[in-house]
Image (cartoon, rainbow, N blue to C red; front, top):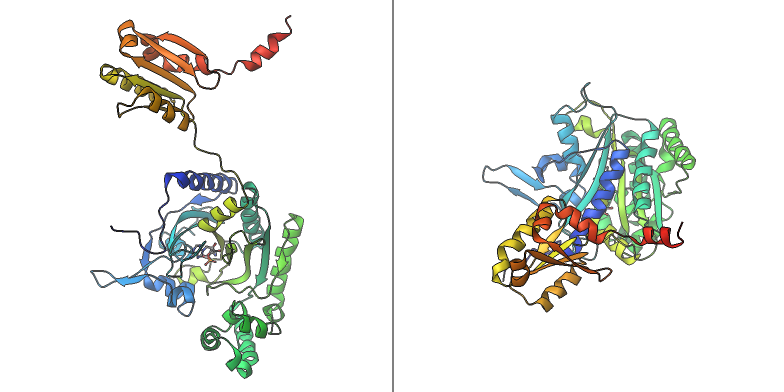
Length: 440
Ligand code: HAM
């Protein structure tokens, strides 16, 4: 038997409606903030990610699915969404005068990272992400963070905490980098193996390492905040002031550095405080990437965004017992009994669907008893039964599943105007009954 690839998951009908629900909530919310959808390819050139995410990051150096295609092009499956969106923004000149500014885009789709699979961590996973281009205003940082926060509020997720930090400008980070090298070099031997390597390639990653020895040594390490210049400091303070004004609670955490190289200024993560998703507690990560558009060949335009991990969010909703509206009940189930009614049952379901109703029938010649099992499984509202006798008499038997009330209608009337028949036999009359109970 051929099985799915390790770290990739099938999304079965028992779950796909939950994905659709989350996507609907996201699309509806993004619309209110004027974000428009962009769909970029899942394959991009390898260079795009090595230049943006950075070739010393774990994502590019260890986790990327890359290969040479039959034309000897070096291709990568996208490990994240920002780089592709920036490439499209530059390639299609979305910074041009005919486009809105800031230009706000969102995407929903699969990403690929060769990581060790576990709950909430997959090799093919899905992100919902947004990117806004062309505004350096700290109010845009606040708006982006408010949007992420609002999204979780709409879903009624609890126990989330927002962590903020600022990475300042590249030149400030360069000085910080030197300070970190100076701080960690004398204790290099005590760092984890990975962090010993990071000391040369990417010393900031030591700060957010999960290894206990690195954590202990990082405690008194220099903090980036102390290396920010006046302008960066002011930007960060304004972001905080805006968040205060919007009543969005946050914690400044100097150990957040993010695992992608393109960030500048504001970075943030939203983390689950309880242990609902175990070790993979970061549901959302993002930040500002002001130099990236230029680096990819566009004008000096700023950018900021975030991405939410769908799998982690779904685990979280499940663990927190948040109900996702189930699939719609079936309006009409046509119970056909006998071969002679094959055609007429097909005509009835077709008429129902054309009238905008959700309808189903049996195709397996099943008994009444087993059809009734399906009827209750589908949460059916109205059953229409046609057997040989009904067909001969030109009639259809009806049963309202909620009230148990039964009735008979002419087959010709059902076929001519099934919507009216459906309404007549399913309308909730209890309100009207209640109204008239006392008499006039
Ligand atoms: P990231 O922090 O690498 O950022 O990923 C964002 C989110 O994707 C994570 O917080 C997590 O929820 C989810 N995620 C990441 N890797 C996996 C995995 N292997 N399995 C399941 N979920 C995962 C970015 O990707 C940036 N592009 C975000 C961004 C957008 N920054 C600015 N704009």
